[in-house]
Image 1 (cartoon, rainbow, N blue to C red):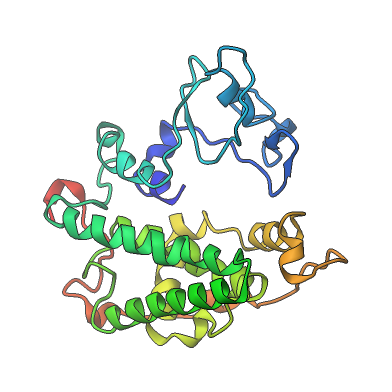
Image 2 (cartoon, rainbow, N blue to C red):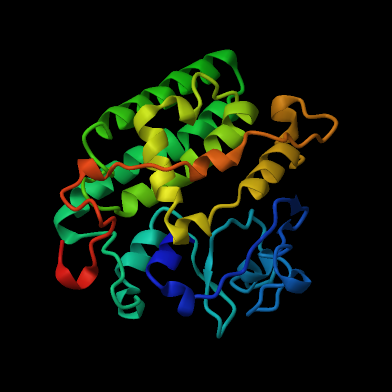
Length: 278
């Protein structure tokens, strides 16, 4: 969603938004008017998957995100790891004028390597902590996850962003885990060695990303808390038998001023535009 907004693809790719719960048929478009996707007019995400089945009944679990063809209503891609890269590359003819170059050719090998690290050790790593089913598995995942955070904390000591002076695809991938961390992962997933605010560099870096309008407008603290704290399949993780949604933490701290421009050769710029090269 963030990449779509930054590149201006929200002008050509519509968005249907599922809610925080799954019913027996899976995800429902409860966040859209009339509980239907605004373009396809469907109530269940499963309806996209059903259209690709000979008997019209998809038996596996429908997953988000999925890109659907608005003409046929069929799903064409649900590879969440690569969709942002496809937005950066295959959809380039539809980028807005002056769109940021989030996947510069000169850095693609390094970005790909870093993306796999972030995906395995951070994005999925925190789930390995939260969904561990033994003390041994939990502690192994716990140490592995916080070790990864320590690596990125060190990396950001002398870099404004993960690849240097400008925001790239790697930063966009790291942000969703960071922005959810203190609000839900620290408590619900027992990933409680440190909070994000305890990391000098990661905390300032995350705030700088948050304060970019397209990113802030794609951040939903209340939805994160409702989903992770109240979803039937997640409540047992932290014993929330009375369906209590925590009041905190105070998310106004994300608005606190931050200045990491001294780490960049271009302190006034956060993005390199596509037209001018990297």
